Length: 150
Image (tube, rainbow, N blue to C red; front, side):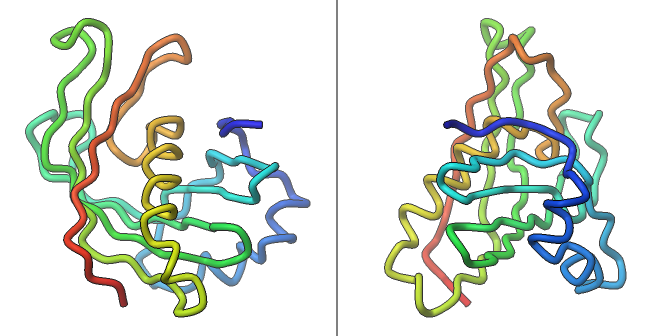
């Protein structure tokens, strides 16, 4: 199964203890929709963003809840550039820099795979990178990551 966008069910909300996750930052505005790959036990949702998603030139910083195969991996990103589908042959393009990623020590050897899965989830999710396109559109994301893990 691949990633799908869906509203978070009450059962999943409880299963992943999202009530506790929602309270980790006082300024969080957690989304109640996510991109999830149930077969691989990976999900992504926007936890908080700052910036104007409608202004293609605005800086967007996003805090993500990324759950990767049993481990919670909070990620902070900055949107560097966006090109709307109308200016890019129907493909939405977004260039994102990973500012901070908190990978638990027991899975740090999988950092490349985690980032690959994060990028895939972003392309499906489209929410926290300032994209509001329909399901028939394509999204392409490039990630910049400078290698620091906390």
